[in-house]
Length: 268
Ligand SMILES: [Zn+2]
Image 1 (cartoon, rainbow, N blue to C red):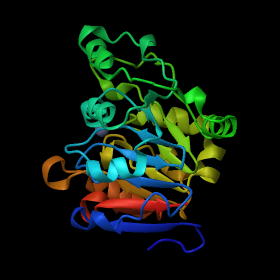
Image 2 (image 1 turned 180 degrees about the vertical axis):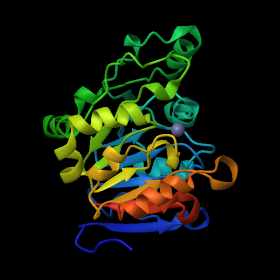
Image 3 (image 1 turned 90 degrees about the horizontal axis):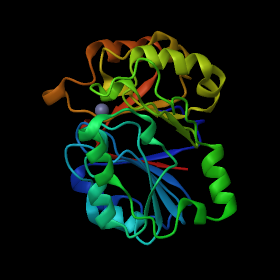
């Protein structure tokens, strides 16, 4: 299913077989797309630190596995936006790992109102050390590979619609577009065409494969050798939508659903 010349190995483990996940000592770095129902929690695992791209979903990843991969390391949380299916377990992360930090993100620039502000306050991490304590090369690499395309809210941002503003990350070949709207996707795509087409080997499906967020400008930039992962639940939410799967087919992009395959491990 996957193009062989991508330098990757993907191990797919069902919930029941999660014990077979390769442990953290086997590879220098890897991405783990957790099967958490509809939502997003993807962990980038390095010997010194873990970066969690959102920490949401309908249920938690297996906590034993989380701690075996990321326990005793600096854990960094990079949030796309403040919606339940992306932030639900942020308090749990703080109890699992002693050292949890936020990626440099400034949510205070959003006029988010008291309810969301309380949510963010609850999320406040307890950085024992800091992302700044990572050694210089790790820190430099982390920043070099981090793309913040929408780090300031645009005029279309509305506090009542969490999806109206998303931070988009590209980290070591993995694109995290969050639940970006069609309009904002077209905007950040046009600003980063070359980067998206040449540097994206893997990406999460935007908004779990919803039909309302399909931007043809974005799909056109995706390289047919890349792979999409869909973290959704068909029976409950109807994602990925038929229009989304038709778009994937039209643009010859392979995709895997966590609902079918369980946790998906991308070994680098
Ligand atoms: Zn979502």
